[in-house]
Length: 131
Image (cartoon, rainbow, N blue to C red; front, side, top):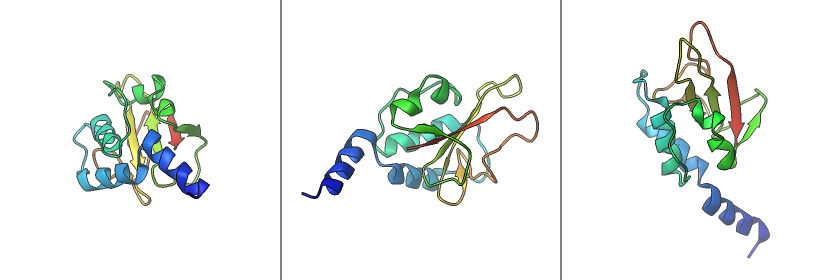
């Protein structure tokens, strides 16, 4: 068996399939927020075969190391790629933070977003992750 194919098979078994996760999120997104970004992104990741403990708040996927344990690496902001994830820190105005995944053309959480930034004011820091 080709080494490249074998490595791809091992990666999909260990880490899940980011394309399946993105597809699930795209097919389940709402036209406007329903306030459940962490649930929708977690549902998508699990639909893609990723195994993890769900977190009570979106920002916890970063602070508790869930994304890095799944094989995601924190990256600098740049041109997003399909499957990239943003985690917005929490603050007094937004106690749960925010999480979203890039579909290849749009940022999606529980809804299709206009950008990776969802707060009009008092925007907490945003962290970027790539598998």
